[in-house]
Length: 204
Length: 200
Image 1 (cartoon, one colour):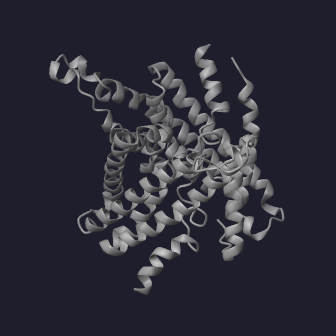
Image 2: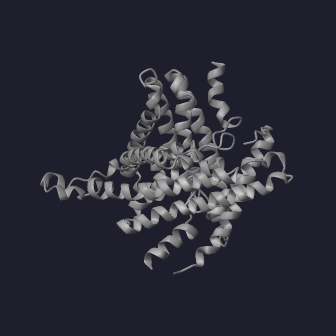
Image 3: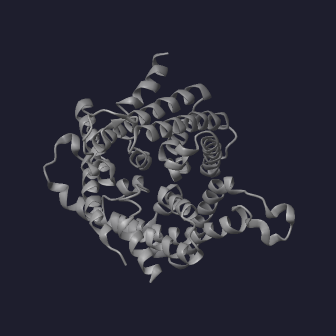
């Protein structure tokens, strides 16, 4: 039950895009068509769901204060390497993306071609690194991290797919010249985020 | 000299990284609840952007083009770690408020974008100028959004109360939707003033 409420909270109440502003760049740039938005959403779910647990392991077995105690060497037991968090996380993310790319290319070539350029770009998507950093800051346990990674990705996918659907509808609306494109998208996102705030009352 | 001046002034309005190029939006929204946090964030980004541009421009003849992304990310990540540690050592309270967003400078598209678009093919001095210009353009928008949000949301600016006792802050400006709406309106105003209607 605890995990279900964590998932609902991450997808709806603390949506990674609409409440924490992570992954805005690709959120704005890739939401013009529903197909691309769906592809990117799926890719983010995969990568976030994989990197969050990986980074959890890296953090808890190597970098956290006292994490090296399992080696049995007393000099290492009190070492605090958490300042290396950022660099290690980004390295893990970059290599996971590469790995996912190769696996998809080998076993699911159709999905691979439909994702195209989005897979490599995910490395610099803030929501991926942000997910890992939140995981450290909120000291999640391993199962919590698993649930968190997948539901944060699902939240991103949900937000980007719905935004792309809305943008498709407003293509023929008469919008003031200066507001076209980015301006209107920002305001639409604002309205969506307001709508998502209505979920804040949910308590499981 | 004229072109050098243009490298700095261009990103301030005509080619602003946030409102025109659409880069680095995440942090522009997340840290702008108060002017103070926005200011610290702007300083941190300026330091990282200038030094990463200079470093990558110095290394530009030695980086094989196939692995340049990885090299760029590692340079940026190391600089961000330094900034993060400095903030933690000297401004602990502020660095706690910024929470993960200092770390997220690594994936801030502006830094990566300028390295890729400018520093990798230009000598160090112009790259520094380019970094400074873009950082100033970013800081300008950041402070503008933060000013609106803090004045409307809490009735103060940089912590100073502006209104007499009894001003009720608007919660909307502090919460996420307010940030989106204010930035949307700023983009609208700027594109109308500069007549830059690039469709993206």
